Amino acid sequence: MNTANLLRLIVLASIWGGSFLFMRISAPTLGPAVLIEFRVLFAALFLAIVGVVLKKRLDMRAHWKHYFILGFFNSAFPFLLFAFAARTLPASVLAVLNATAPMWGAMLGAVWGRQAIRARTALGLVLGTVGVALLVGFDHATSRPGAGLAVAAALVAALSYSVASLYARTAQSVEPFANAHGTMWTSALMVLPALPLFPPAGAPTVGIVGAVIALGVLCSGIAYILYFKLIEEVGTTSALTVTFLSPVFGILWGALFLGEAIGWYTIVGSAITLVGTAFVTGFVPRFGRDAPVPVPTKMSGK
Picture 1: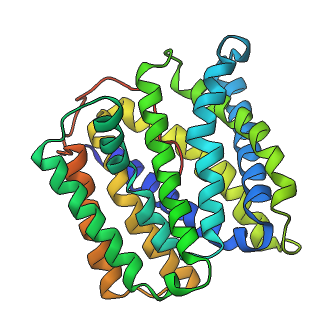
Picture 2: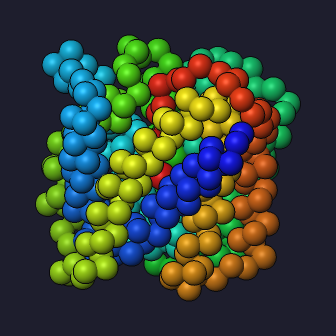
């Protein structure tokens, strides 16, 4: 991995880690539905502009059903759940809970696909559970009213990402950029019915508006382009390193900009969770063109 690609990886991890900061800033005021509706709309508009410039076809008529299914499990539903959780939980906790998606994927593969769980995977699941328990059990924010429901929502969001991954393995092949673009438009339609259920708590400030724009354009638009470029340059395995770096930045941004406390449980719980994730995924860093470009399914902060 050369210097340029290493910088891309770090920038991508910092952007996706920052998505939890932006949600934490805007969700308490806007509510989950309004926040996510604007997030996916801004992302869709940005990607539409990029698509015109790059002459990328969306072909909504041929792939609309695929975009709706993938958009629900990979964007609309988990985005809403994380935004709901962001009203209560710190950005650091959200970032680590998001990293449990591969663990859910392993369990779903064992149940639905009847795949045997190897000893390494089982150890990873145990470690991941211990790490999350440490983080949630000792963080004072989890004692707030509604925190238990917020933690459950974040974990279900991570589960939804893994469902999207399982679906994508057998779904029709669609070009990665079109997947990102198409699912943002379908997500915008699917979030609309939730707007009356979660009205805003107040008027947005300039900072909140900036956070929403950053979520859409930066975290759900520019980040995709960086991710696709990274896969093209260094291969899938090395690009997936972002899964382990994003929580680090999520914790860092929460501490720097929101004054969130970093206790021993934050560091230890996060480290154990990420080690467990590495065991579950069988992650071994490789540098070079080590795999073909897949259909990306975990697209946000993600």
